[in-house]
Amino acid sequence: MVTDHAADLPPPPRFGEFFIQSLKIGCLGFGGPAGQIALMHRVLVDEKRWIDEPRYLHALSFCTLLPGPEAQQLATYIGWLLHGVRGGLAAGLAFILPGALLVTGLSWLYASQGQTPWLAAAFWGVKAAVLALVAEAVMRVAKRALKTRFDLVIAVLAFCALTLLSAPFPAVVLAAAALGLWRSRNAGSADARTPSGVRHRNTFGVVLLWLAIWLTPLVMAVLILGPDHWLSEVARFFSMLAAVSFGGAYAMLAGLQQEAVQVQGWLSTAQMIDGLGLAETTPGPLVLVNGFVGFMAGWNARDGGLGWALAGSLMALWQTFAPSFLYIFAGAPYSEHLRRSPAATGLLKAVTAAVLGVVGSLALWFGLHVLFGKLHLFSTPWGGQISLPDLVTLDPMAALLAVAAGVALIRFHVNVVLVILACAAAGLARWLGLG
Image (cartoon, rainbow, N blue to C red; front, side, top):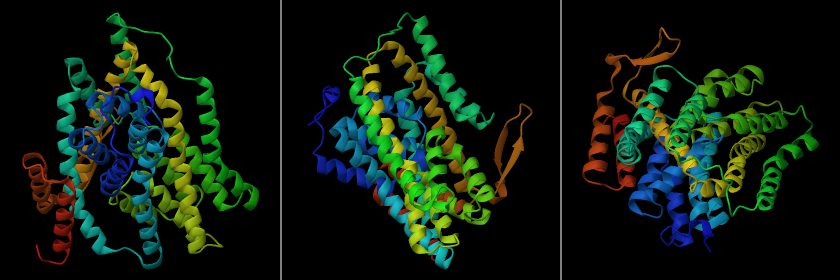
């Protein structure tokens, strides 16, 4: 039964139908958070109409404020809206599991046999499709989210701050939130009321339950293997990372590389780069690279092997994704009730506009890496860094494939699955010398 907070939504889909669509999103969620947010918008808002645009953007804004993978949290939030806790669990797990299984299998192939060129070729084509999907989503959301000149200014400032100034993601979002709150208060719409209808005792129980689910594997590893065992260290590090990784996967990569490579020595720099490439070209959140790191920590350990590698991968993934369920199930009821507060609404609308700028920045970063073989990093006079492409390294085949995918999606509304499969086939044909 749907909880009363969703009473104003259209009738939800049957649970089985919703789970199948969530699994579809999990299997096709290429391209990092920009691609996944675009795909969820296309399927859940435009095609199925199971959630309306304002509710989707409100959920996205709330998830952006949380540490951890915002796309998985968004899927969990929407599942919770439609089918309560079981819907949140189903959507969140369906979003993670396809990519997690694929990354784990590919980690084993990589560790035992090295790189797989045919897979890289297929995902070369997939990247072109994702670039078109992200561009389509940015255009769609911009038309609906940028209602005022103020919203447009916030989005442009967020894009420039990230792209030109290398500003930290949390600072950009917090600045947008402060501007939104300031504007709503100046408009005389402040509302300081606390959320009504939320039982704090229930929230406390949810927090205790999910803290236990999250941290029990870490405690068991320490008690059984000792605090200095590599598996205990993996659990400790990734649980800490899940609590402080504001700004999504890209923001946490520097800390991950430093700890995993330089401090712990779980894998080499070359292996870390290969793992990141593997995670970028498989469905699911980019933080699935944590599973690869955990796998290689177990594989390279003194007592390592496939069994320990699987244990390391599972531990890293558990500590990465379990906290997101805690954040959503404890925080989403408050987020929904705050929708009635004009001050909170103004704050989150500004965050939504900033998120559009963030997605635009990610889309630019992704597009440059798809279309050009080499980028030059330049320091700016104001202390930031900017990446400019080497125009000679433009891949015309990737550009043509991305344009074709864009025309298919935007002009002819071709099913996204068919577009991705066609682009993957084009990548394999190119590798085989047929194109």
